[in-house]
Length: 270
Image (cartoon, rainbow, N blue to C red; front, side, top):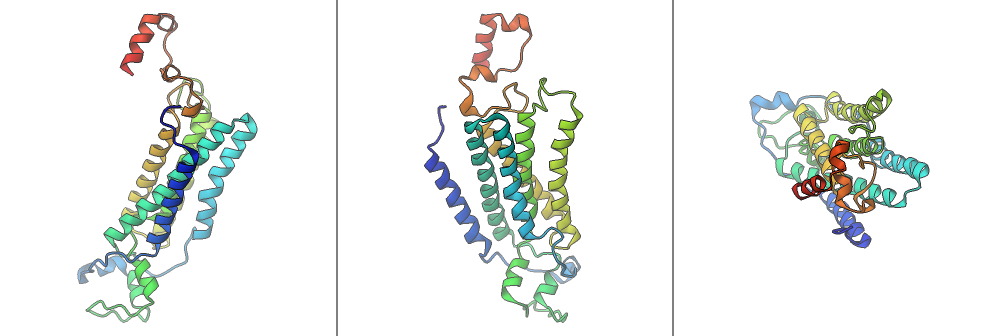
């Protein structure tokens, strides 16, 4: 298909994005000044993550891989499997890089920041922290939530991928409650991961909201680079498998489809 980049270049882009994420993950953010009257926002206790990081990484990588493998076993479509893996990896690594850059620029303290800053409980008016430097640096990376953005960039992609394969949003798949439940369950899963970050006092609700929106937006953006809209009758196929743009025309009444002139005119409008 025209515009398709060589595979080595696609892989290189993902390697670069991962390197950017890796480097920025430990970078020092902007240290936002905390006013005395807003200290209550950052006085929450430090608690273990309800959804730990290693479980998050397992989710982010294994769920998309499992979905791709299942459909490959069912349909034996190598082109689709390759495009899906490229799409999922781009969504995750791009989201990670963008999330980290925003974190560094905003430098918002976490809800448990004061306990990170003053482990002994003695808060100094000058806000010169006495805690562990690494914990303090991470304490300034609350906005947006990385758990939330990663969850939606991964599970959001899987939801879109399955919706396309099962034709959930076009006439070929209407009226099937099981398909809808599967689609919604993936988004609920991502939502619960995001919400858990407010329950364990690692993020504010604004961090979770923006992180979730960021992850889902980038997941959809990346998905549409490789797959047509979910409303199309060919939503189950990647762009590289479509012979022409004619296959992307919405389903038309039979009398219009049989009218060559009408179809050609519509093609010019698309």
